[in-house]
Length: 65
Image (cartoon, rainbow, N blue to C red):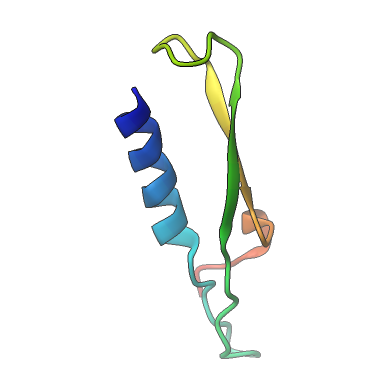
């Protein structure tokens, strides 16, 4: 289970490591992974209900262009 959680966190971190440049500001926005907190379930088991991932920049404010 820990390998799966780490893999999910690693993939999310890689996808959000660098923000996407925009036509107005071509400078990428640096985004770093800060933490992961289990939500629900029992710690150390496969019955967790989710993870709350925290990044240095709100990923919802980034754009793909």
